[in-house]
Amino acid sequence: AGEAYFDVSPNPDRPFQVGVEAVTVTVLGTAFDVRRGADETDIAVSHGVVRVDTAAVNPPVTETLTAGQAVRISWSGHSKRGDSPVQQVAAWRQNQLIARDEPLGIVVDQLRPYYRLLSTSPSPRDPTSP
Image (cartoon, rainbow, N blue to C red; front, side, top):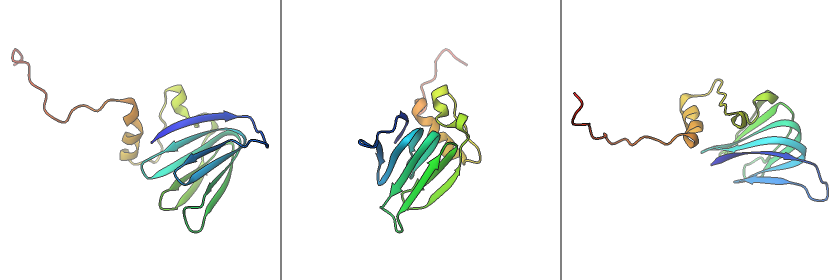
């Protein structure tokens, strides 16, 4: 699990690819964000073009994304295209988390890498406190 942002110049002789499980993102000259979640991979494009492929599902998924577009591909093979405002792509780079129409559990999961979870066991009380 994790997230990375790439800003890549195109080189037809040596295409840049990012692999996440069975999903392959091929750079066609772009800046984009890739996030691997527990059950899916999200790709959002800041500028340029990427091609997203996965042959692990039937039928295989191939999507071409341009600036402001995104796709979520679940491990079960479902894909959902959408828009992602360019200024919000990889918002974590500006110490932001933007959640819109997301279940609270997904938002909490996105916050986990940034905060240590408190122990679920009760902490000892200070004997001097009331």
